[in-house]
Image (spheres, one colour):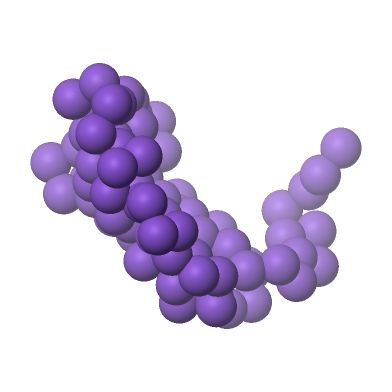
Length: 88
C-alpha cells in the first residue's frame, strides 16, 4: 500500500491532470500531489469534469503530447491522425 509520504520517492516524470470542475479530484488535490512529487507538472483542464478523457479526448491528447515533448519523448509523426477516430 502506498502512503502520502511515499510520493517523495517517485523519480519518474509525472503529470497530474484534473478537470477544473471535477469535484472528486480538485485543483487543490492536484497541487498537493505535485508538491509531494519532485518536478511533477500539473495540468488543470478548463471547463472539464472527471470524465475528461471521454468527453474531451482531443484536449487530453494535447496535454499529454505537450508533456511527452517536455520530458524528451518525441511526438509521433501521426499524432494528429491517431485522434481523428476518437469519440468527440
